[in-house]
Image 1 (cartoon, rainbow, N blue to C red):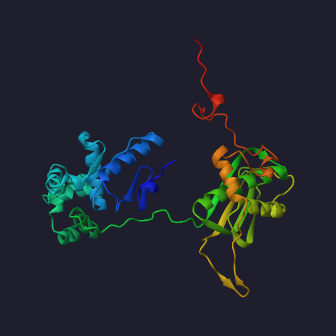
Image 2 (image 1 turned 135 degrees about the horizontal axis):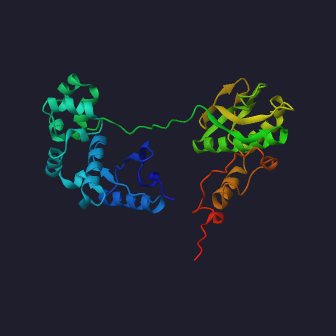
Image 3 (image 1 turned 90 degrees about the vertical axis):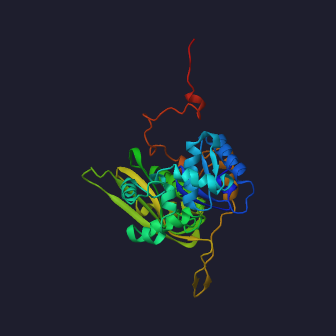
Length: 333
């Protein structure tokens, strides 16, 4: 399945439906934009528009034009339009359509006789900075093809990763808690591996209902001798230290794990005895390939099957008509 990384050397994910791509060195940008639209439509089923410009502000303006004018067929390349046509489009577009200009700022700009995007483009950057802020000075520069705003990596690696869930019913057995914690270890490990991280510490916890009179919350912190990223190694630690938190007779309602001390593979601390190495599981690539090919539930640790009592109640969950053959609609003619 194609991703945005396949279409650019660098990207900035702004939100679930917006991203900036670095298209440096790519020929025929309009055709490239159409390929992006086609792939997203093919794999996700959502129509999108692509705006191409020399700066981020101009790219946002181009995206606005691609939505407004159907003749552009969803892709607006300002370089292809030419300076005269771009200026004309700016003269026909209200200043409120500029990226970063809200309703209140638009009114203040209009009071200064800056009513269109072209008016803002031809304004004095220093005056805009004095009247508003340095942000507006940057916007004016970007409208004039001076790149000020660089692509940002908004999604920094996590400092900790949590996986937890309330049970569908109270759990009183050790096997039930072990099964739940093993599941959460695998989920947290999967999130961690996506970011290329390793964990030096893991906290496991379990607690009863907060509304019960005999509320009980137990946890223990596990320090790994080496940074690890394999749920198989982590689950061994859970089995070893589970008795520190499990209390016979308690009616547990929730359990989970917290991975902390996250580091990348470049982490090379030194101690008196040399470098700390990383624990790498030789079976993990094969396990991930099996899950990718046959589904997430195709292979798992045996301890997750010790009990199903910890599963959430799904009585009111919507039917999965398109992904589960058992939920297909039946039509009587």
